[in-house]
Length: 605
Image (cartoon, rainbow, N blue to C red; front, side):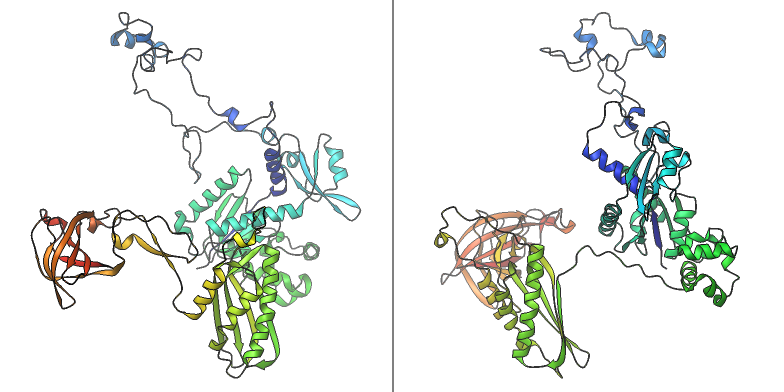
C-alpha cells in the first residue's frame, strides 16, 4: 500500500529571508521575542547571595548563616502564616527544595504539551512590518508572496507591486530569489533522505513529496511523524502543512487546499476527499483554468460526470491525466533526489569488439573521462566498476580498488589492464561504461620548504594496488589491536596503509588460532598449575616448563553467556622446544566460571 506525503511551505520565500536576516545580524535591543512571553524564574531575594564568602555553611542555610539559630520559627508557627508569607525551603536550609524542570515550558517534538504554554502572539509581533516578495514579469512587478500581516491587509500574490504599495504605505519589499528558494528545498530534501525516508522529491516551488511507504512505523505512525516534522520546521521558523494520502496528486491538493495543518487520508478515499476542492488543486495550466471557468467548471467534482473525450478536447489531455493521477487510476512516479552522483563515463561502439587491444583502448578513453571528472570534483577514486554489454544481452563486470584515493590515469589503466583477461567478450562487446561508486577527497599536500624530494618516503599505494591485483581474491592487509580483553577479539584486519594501534604489553603468541581447539588427555594440578601432559591433533606432548596463569574474564556487556566466564592462560614449553599458549575454562573453584576443559589458542615461534 503506497503512502505519499505532500509537505507545503506557503511562506517559504519570506521565512527563508527572515531566517537569513536573523543569522546575519545580531538581535536588536527592542526586538520582540517569544522568549519575552515565557515565564521568568522566580528569585526569593535577588540581591542576596546564599553562599557567603569565607563561610563554612552550606548553600541555602540563611537562618544559620545569620546567627538566628535560637530564633528559628517552629513548624506550627510556619503553618499559621499565610501561604505567601511562609519562608521557602531554601531559607529553612533544606536541600530538597522543588525546582521546575528547565524544559517544562517547551513543547515536545510530537506536538504534545510539555507544560505551561506561552501566551498567543499576534502576527505583527512575529513578523513586524508587512512584507511582500516581488518578481519582474514583462513590464510589471508582480507580488509572488506575502506574509500573514500583508495578507490580512488585503495584499495577494499576483497583484501588481504598484497597487500593493498604494494600499499599504509601510511595506517591506524584497526581490524574489527563486534559485535560493530551490536550493533551500534541495537541502531539505537531502535531509529528508538522510533522516526520514529514502525517497524524497521537490514538489514545485513550495513543497516536498515524501514516499512514506513502509517507514512511518519507525516514528510511531503517520500522525506522530507528521507532528514531529512540523515541529522540526517550526524550530527552523517555517510554517507548513502536510497531508498523507495514497496518491501524490491527492496529497498535493489536500495539503494546499484542504484547510488543515495535518491531513491523513485513507487509501482509496481520494475521489471523495478532493471532490470539493477548487480546480487549481489539480496543478493544471493557467490556460486550462481559464477554459474551465468559461464553461462554468469550478470544482473537481464537476469533472467526474464529463466523458474523457470531450474533457480532453476542451481542457486538454493534461487535465485528464492529472485527474486520473489524483484518483489513483494512473501512476505518478516520484523522481527522488540522489545525495551522491557517482562519476560515470560510457562509450557506445559502432561495431562489437572482442580483442584485448580494442578493449584496452576503450578502457583508456573511459579512464581519461573519469580522471577529468574527479579533477573537477577535487576527489580521487577508491573503487571503480567496469561494465561491458555483450551483444547477446549479458553483461561482464570487472572491479578494482585502490589503497589510497587516486586520479592518476596511468595507474588506473594499468590496474584495469591486469583484469582484461577476466572479460569474456562472447559474440562481441557493443557498449562499455565505467563508474566510481566510492570516491574520497584528494587535495594538494604541503611539502617541505627545502624541496628535498629524496628525503620524502616512497608512496607504497601503487605497489600495494599491483599486489592486490595479482593475488586476488586475497588482498594485502595489516593487523592492529582492538579494545577487547578476549584475545581472539583483540586483533583485527585494517587497510595496508592505515596506522595500527599500539599493541598491549602482555606477551602474545606469533601465531594465534582462529578458534581455540580442544585438548584431550590433559593432566594438571588445580587450581593454578599448568598441565603436565596433553594431546593435541593426535600428538602427545609432555610439558617441561610453564608460566602462568594469566586470568581473563568474559565481556559480559557483549553477551550474557560471558557473565561468569573465566579463562586461565598458561605459556608452556614441551619436550623438543615447542612452546604453546593454552588456557583452561574456569577458575577451578566456582562451577559457573567454566567446566575446566583445556584449549590450545596459539603457538610461540
